Image 1 (cartoon, one colour):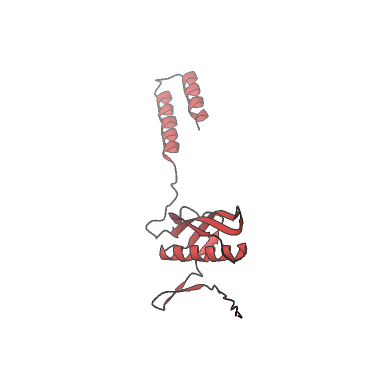
Image 2 (cartoon, rainbow, N blue to C red):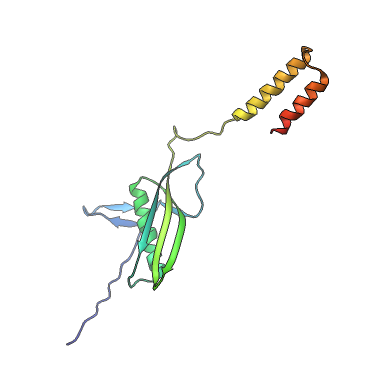
Length: 157
């Protein structure tokens, strides 16, 4: 009896085929090791991908998982996957991989966090120093008390 071995090759691209024959473009989903600026992006959720015993190399399994993670990010309407863990090999399975990442999406214009010009603590310190100066000018505290309290406030910066 003769056997015919037919190799099966899977190619990944930047498009995924849906059951209705439409495609999902994942080329604009970034996979990185650096979290995006929280002012412009918000955390969505943690995702993972695992490839166990198969005939693929670890590199092929990582590429497949990264592609799957891009697809999941796209479904979540997100544009960045920050890799947290990329484990290769597990016990007797040298080609097994486990990837974990955080998904982020861009904030809309109304969600963008603008930095405050001054924090509440800074305003409070400024208000305390101003009030201290006023007390000194009104003669309610001495120069010595003023300098002592001023130093204590500045030390807390």
